[in-house]
Image 1 (cartoon, rainbow, N blue to C red):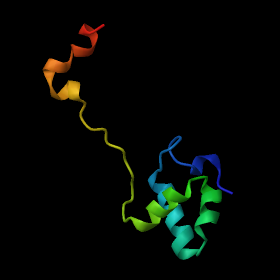
Image 2: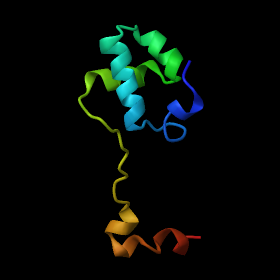
Image 3: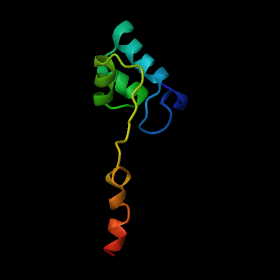
Image 4: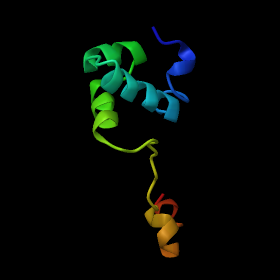
Length: 81
């Protein structure tokens, strides 16, 4: 069983080491996806994503907000209150 240090860098975030362990378990050790999910405590969706992609790191990038893009919108919601 994986220790808590192997779970990633916090809740909901995969680190490079965890991605490498998932790939190693699937390709080298021939473990089924369900077994990998149980061992690393990640969803099947995440395991399939890691196996199918060639990325070594998954990162969420937030888009620009409307208020940041348009200076006229910065005070709009507060003026309606």
